[in-house]
Length: 152
Image (cartoon, rainbow, N blue to C red; front, side, top):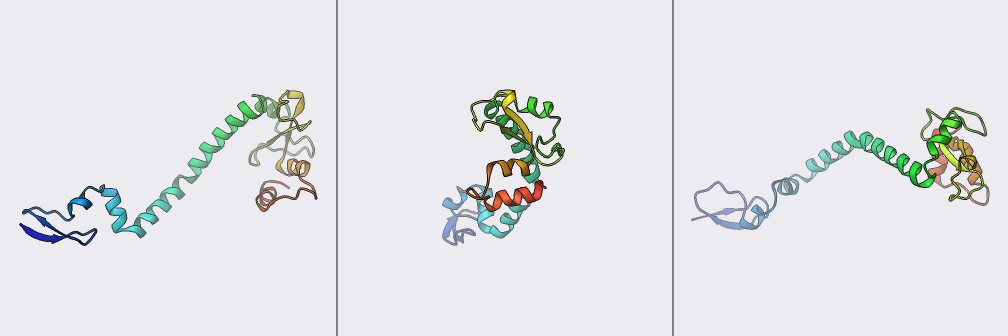
């Protein structure tokens, strides 16, 4: 039996003519975790690149699922009907909202439980924000940037 030093925890361990690089405890750790522990900067960079490459796919998936949830639950399944009825045009400023982010569907009587088609209308982000926020209820930074980016 010969003593050897573990590459991961630097402890001394005994081995029998094998090419072991890790002590008993460290060999129980999965290969990926060992690799992560030995190369943290490289693994962080790989994770960052993976997130960057898959971000748009993730965003698209989230958008589709959110639209489905909004359509089914929040607007009682009438969201798409209202967008088609209004021909994807804002009912206040009459601009086309089909290519500008996600069009807003607004409850006219501000009662979120009243999902009748007559109570819903299509709005652009800018007009929708103007309806909901005034001097008493100012926009937060995220909402303001969203209007600047997608609104008028």
